[in-house]
Amino acid sequence: MPHASVIRFSKSHHPAQERWVDRHRKPLIIALASLLLLGIAVGAMTLGAYHLEASDIIRVIRFHCDPFTTLPSVSRLHDTIVWKIRLPRILLAVNTGIALSLSGAVFQGCFRNPLVEPYILGISSGAAFGAALGIVLPGFFLSVQALAFIFALTAVATAYFLAHTRGETPVIMLILSGVIVGSVFSAFVGIMKFVAEDSALREIVFWLMGGFYYASWGDVALLSPIILTSFFIIWSQSWKLNILSMGDDEARTLGVNPELLKCILIILATLSTAVAVSTTGIIAWVGLMMPHAARMMLGPDHRYLIPLASILGGIYLIACDTAARTLLHVEIPIGIITSIAGAPYLFFLLRSRGHSAFGGA
Amino acid sequence: MLDIDALNHRYAPREETILDNVSFHVKRGSLCALFGPNGCGKSTLFRCCLKLLPLQAGQVTMKGRDIREMGIREMARTVAYVPQEHKPPFPYLVREVVLMGRTPHMNGLFGVGKEEMRKAEEALARLDLAHLSHRAYNDLSGGQRQMVLMARAIAQETDIMFLDEPTSALDFSNQIKIWKTIRKIADSGVTILACTHDPNHVSWFCDAVVVLGNRTVVATGPPDRVITRETLNLIYNDMCDVGQLNGSKIVFPSHLTETRRAV
Image 1: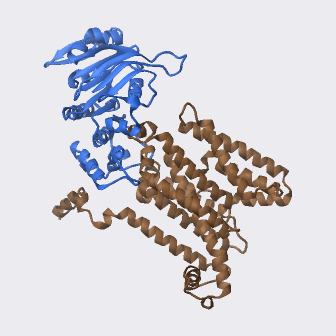
Image 2: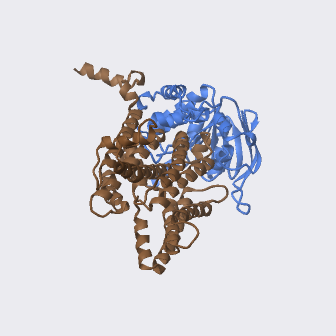
Image 3: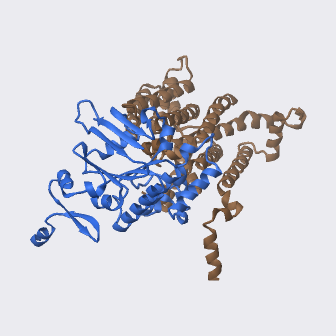
């Protein structure tokens, strides 16, 4: 028996002799997670005030995607529930999950800090102020969504330029100026709450807790091109993000321009987060948690971490949103659910895997 | 191979000069030490040569090319930088850290091909580190991490290598092991500039030495001519003696016996 164990030991050091499953473990896990996302999406669409079977849902989707199916095969009621209400809502949740997790992974890598979340540069406070402004001044020519988007970008741009000195953007400066800009916009939100009428105040509070209540195909058409394009560009740069996370000096001596890459990645991550946040309100925890979960499953290599974190983000938000609309008779804002479900998870992570998940420092 | 000519540097126009008219030359395939006390400008000189700081005055030439004319990628294919061992924020595997050295040679969108993986494994094998390949870099000992960073520089396949105090955080046996490895790399034809604090390492392992003291070059040449009592006492204010032990030169603090007796 000891002989056999010696052989196995020496085998494990020769990658060429690894089993096929071991060599392709990471892509396989990503493929499995995508299948799970698909399954959960269909499953979530069956749940709700009106119960549907998975076959009903597939029939409706086929009816819309396949020109050779005819109308009588699906009922109008099913069509309305699935196509007009539940499908756009699920797609919005998936897109938001991708945007937040993707940006979380990007910001954690760029800032070389596993505790950073996509809101670190003040994006959430900026969006909150924009939304509050739109709610308090309904006559303004821009919508709540557009105002939230504009101020989210304004906040990040301000933080970035405050931190930019002598052609460099040091991480510490960036995080500190993000904190400063965030607190200024939070104060502005406070002013808005102070001057708002009762009904407007209620609306602001709900917006701040996030939700997919008003999901429409228009939102999906706006979000998905921006988010999916950002995803693929960021994914294509994911190896360089590994290099960037070693620090600016090392990145430069390894042939990567840290300033340029950081700038591109932060712009894309900000754009996707801003467009998602301005549509759905502020959803906490997802952008911090999902990159961690992915890192624990596949390790820190961003080539695998970025797709897995994005898929997990989609799954998590579908699950939370389904809970939000089915647990009680009224809808619970999703931000409450993601926080309540997320906090114990992160606590568990910290106690059980703190050493490896947080860099072993 | 590496020419540094009349380099001057100061961090801000009104602050004091850090480097004042520094010039020296490193021969192809030689292991040259950059030696000097704390705060003498070694790091600044390194950063200027690697284009981590803008070149203010003077010229740096690598393989006959002015570094001002070289882009980031071309620089990374010409000179590799080995930092002091460190812990990055994420626990990358050793093979991933070494693979990072292949980045300036990667093409295409996703970059990492089979060829690059093979070169990374080869670099690990050359330093007898193949058994660490699947370990997390952060979990290794300091000496092992320094070895992995050198393997990364080998994988980068550059003609010039810069080492930043490669042994300063290591124990005695690891220091010697690392220096022997550096010697091996230099003997394979790579031109190396390594900064160090230990005069003994310089005289035991290096082909040449540049002594930097008080912002400028104090002496250059082969260690047996340069590492002398006079040079050391010039930069360290009269506190060194140089002796011989089994044919090797050894530097030790003066008045060692008197200090001991006083205790």
